[in-house]
Length: 555
Image (cartoon, rainbow, N blue to C red; front, side, top):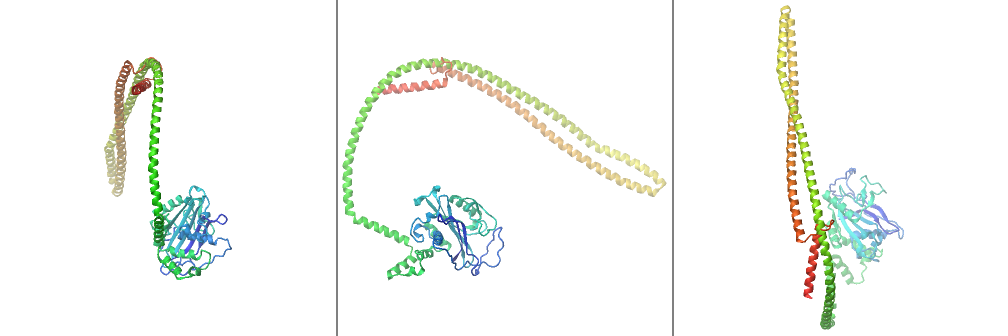
């Protein structure tokens, strides 16, 4: 069983007394929860102290007449009992639509807490006007319902009713919703994305009344209890009025409505009533059907005869009109075709002249392009060869330097040996004068020699490695330059091949154009004629002439 813990109302209510963003908090003042379920706190929320407590067992709201008590109950009941028939009071079926302005997207969210485990579930309703325009058509009033289990990622405080929701802890009297209000579609997308990111939220969205009522039953919230509340508060009276029955049948009807789903029985009653009305008017309907069928048959024959006569007259009149029109068009077309034939001959002459000039210009352009491509490839090849030669010289210098560094080790060993001989000779002389100091000096000299040899050997090896790496890099650059020069030569040869192919194709086009001129398809007389357009116009004229001749023969 669940108890109402909090109510949040956002951007909804009558025009004179609206809920901008209001939260009615009933938490933490009841008895402790007997078996609290483990919960994970929000990221910025302090750790809970002690076991959770149940909401307030009762509350009193003191307001004057017209202060909004009925409005609050109607909004809460619209979440748990969807549909205009279940509106508290029942005076007007469109009373909920009066609580929403054109630009509003109203929200009513209820947070319920389980009396045994302390687990919470949030159920809510969102509504707006389609097209952002208030209308008397109920189909333009969009409603939807949703539910989720609050936790990290989504709670009643940070519902995505606006584009920006504060992450800071809530402050009494300050709304956490900042920025522009979301539409119904934007709100649905936001909570759906939250449900995908946090599966433990168990987000559910519904737009059909019956399915929403079934989902409330699955959550453990029985809408039937709210139906009793609606009936008890229909006239803002007391609960005793619900059970004030005058006879036994009224109490039986009340009991049957409480334990039976009336949707199926109402549909059956409507169906039986419809069949009864049809059976009562059966004789009248049969006579009307027979009279209508006979009348339709006779009228159909008259209409068919009238339509046939009209079609015959129309066909005869149209045939006469087309014959006269055809004769006039044939005489006019003959004169036009003679004039057009002379024009086409002049155009063919002009086209031939233009083709000759275009061919010469194309030859010059092809030669210039080929020469430019050849010179570009030659310059690129020369530059590549120079770069390759420079890199080869640098590689040879590097190899020479590397060989010198490799020979440096033998030189160092020779110098070290000479120094050692000198020191040994000096040591022998000193040993003759003073044996003990000479032995100590010789030992110290040997140590210094070993250290110097080790240091010189390390420096020589590092330098040799560096020169080896530089030689490898220079070798790679040389190989790349060689490949580039080969590619440039290949591209130059391909350009020469393409130029030859284009010259061959141009020769073929010129032969085809000359054949068209000899056949009479193109006119080369006009200097500014387009050969392709003239060919198309000649083809169209030939087609039109053939069609006109066929039509004349048929007439």
